[in-house]
Image (cartoon, rainbow, N blue to C red; front, side):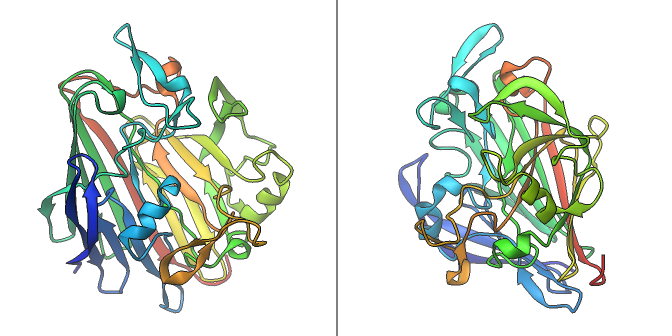
Length: 367
């Protein structure tokens, strides 16, 4: 039986009201001890503890112990819900119903990224339901916020069950035609949130995708899709992540930050990715109804050699470059400007329905 425990995480200023507000934390706990903690600030996944093959619990999700940590390092979006539109929008503009829409340009004063200056990651969400297995949070984004038309009401139901399935169901409705592509930006390391670069290289990864979105030097889509077969981006079967990282080490990024076009039927929740850490036995599966998966290896975090200012995370550990990964379910980036990409347009009367289940477990040490 799953328990839902509430406590107060801290105090923060809600940028939508400019008033101080309580940041509530809801921790979902299974009988085996697996737990997930969710904050009302940014609908953030603050902690995710999973047992290894010996039953030892480890927090596998990067984050902070207090509100100040999230404020100091907001640009990394650790664990945060991203919206209205995740990822990049070229030049902060697109056409909607024949009219040009201009949204905020918070990326190098040139492009729009992850919802703008005050995205879903920054606001205090309302609690609209506490259930036997989880919690539902809500945010109402006003018409015109960050340039997006239409008042948008978003509900996220977070749930956990005894089989190790942590689910998020994101639903949104709008009062005027708008663009919606919501995601979660959690960083994971199955060896432990502070285990670092060497352990990330121990992971094995599978992504059910034959193509990735081709991008330019600014990581903006060109409109083309690139086949991954016989390239370092081919994760169609379980393969060593360390081996693949070594293969791309001389590329400009020196790691991965790519959008994979996953092979799923429309509106069906299916397995799209699997990650295994053989040394601990922990594994993670991603099941979703979304057509895209943003896979990155935290290339923008400080270097391990001490040349950069360190980021102190939970328990005082330093988070480092390529010490974690993301698998963000979403639609393709900059989809509003590419008619061949899956649409992110939401009309009044339509329901935006984004489902994702992260299934965690452990297997014998040998994989």
